[in-house]
Length: 195
Image 1 (cartoon, helix red, strand yellow):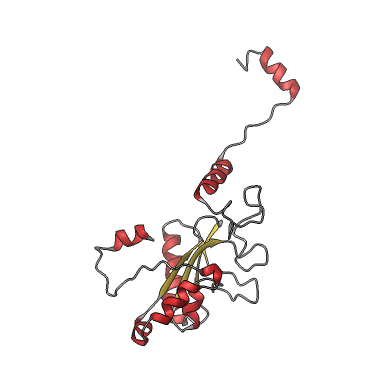
Image 2 (cartoon, one colour; image 1 turned 180 degrees about the horizontal axis):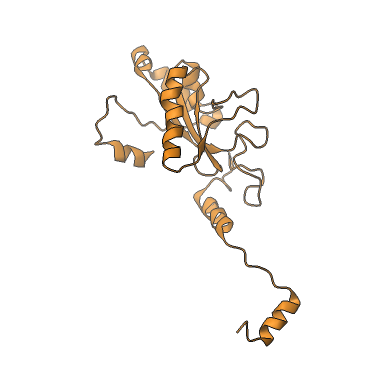
């Protein structure tokens, strides 16, 4: 987020942009709730879109989702446009396929954006997860593996840290060497291999 703010600081825009880091999402979206409560009616009315960046590293798919109350015209200008731009740049991007009836197609769930969505402010959620796994609710971020036994890093300091993520990524990108059978090793040594 800070990198994005740095890159945009001298770019002329038609509208003001605020970068806000909130905390307390896991405790009931406390930071977003506090921000919304402190916004004046004019600020709420003039907020054209809230973009929520969350869990951008561990998940195996990038998603752009709208809020349930985000109007279709805004969804087209935000979510659908983000998907098109990503794809034009060769970035695989998706929106929630709606495989779980509790989470309609193209919408997100259960993050800071939902506070603004409930207040009628349009939202765009950007996250890396996998809406096709587990309960199909976006909580399982990737296939289960030794590095991520539940397919997620949520709320786990052992898994949700840069060192573990880098280590598991390096492990996943190693090319496995073919195993030789015992007889093959002996034959290779006799033929001058293995020196």
